[in-house]
Image (cartoon, rainbow over all chains, first blue to last red; front, side, top):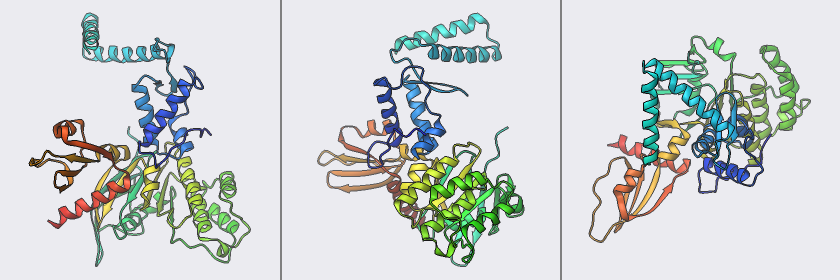
Length: 128
Length: 296
C-alpha cells in the first residue's frame, strides 16, 4: 500500500492541493519518471484515508496542468515533464481527435468542415 | 443503464410527538461515502432507522439498494451492514461464537477477511464479549458487519467515544471498503474532522430538516470568509449570497456560500483577506443561517 504522501488537517491548504504538491515534488525529483503509472484513485484514497472525491480532484487538476495523463480504463501516468509530445500525450490527443471525428460524423459535417473547425480552434488557442 | 442508487429518499416525513423529520430527500451513489452531519437531536438516528427499516415513514419514498423500505426490507438487509453504538452482543458468549452465529445466517460471510480483521483490530475470539472495552465493543460489532461484505454500510456515530488510534483504524478500514466501487457507506457523526477527511458527499440536517447536501469538494470551494476594510464613510451595498455579515466600523466580515472570482472583483480594493473554511465552520455557519431563516 502506498503511503508516502501525508495529509495534514492543520495545513491551511485544502487536502487535494496537498496531494497535488507532493505528487509534483516526486515527479520533479525524478522519483516518478515520465510514463510511470500512478496509484489508482481508489487505491491512493484508501492508502491516505482521504475521500475518493478529494483524490479525484487532485488527479483532475494535475491532468489539467499537464503533469499527468489519464487514459480511460487504463489509469493515470506521469506525463512527459519537458512538455515534449510524449507517447502518452499523443495517445491522448488521438483519443480526443477520434471523439471529435465521431461527433462530426453524427452532425453530418464533411471532412473539410471538420478540418476547418480544427483550424479555427488552433487560431483561438494562438490568440490566448 | 445507470447503476441503482444505494440510497434514495424522496420527500420523507416522519412525525413524533415532539419531533418531526420533514421533507427529507437524499441520494447515495455506489462507490461513495456520505457523511450525515447534524447537532444532537437533528434527526440523524431517525433517518438511519428509516433507512434500515426500523421505522416506517408517514409520507414519501425510501429505496435502499433498489428495494422499497420498509416493505422489502428482508431483501435489502441481506446487503446492508448496520452498526450503531447502541448494539448489544450476548454478554456470556465469546466473540468467536458471535462470528460463527453471524456466518451461519449470512452466506456471504468472508472467513478470511474476518480473520484479517480480528488481527488488525486486536480482538480475541475466545474472549467473552462482556469483558470488551467500549472501543473493542465497537470494533467487534463493526467486524461482524464488515466480514459479511455488505454492499451498503450504515453506521450510526461509529467513531464516537473512540480513542484516536481506534478512530484511525476504523477510518482506514472504511476507506479500504471503498476500494470496491460497487460498495458505499453512509455514516452519521458530529465529528466534522472525520467527515471532512473521508466523505465524498456531505448532508447537513438540523431540527428535522435537510439544510444542505452536496459533494464535499463543492462545499469547501463555495464557502469563504472575506474580511474587508472600507474607506472611511463608505458603506457596502446589499450583496447576494451572503450567509452572514458583521459590520464593525470600517471593518466588515462577510461569509458567503457562493464564492467566486466575480464576487472578489466586485468587492475590489477593500478586500483584506479571503479565508477558506473547514467543514466544522461551514457546518456551524450553515446551521445558524438556516435557523435564522426559519425564525423569520
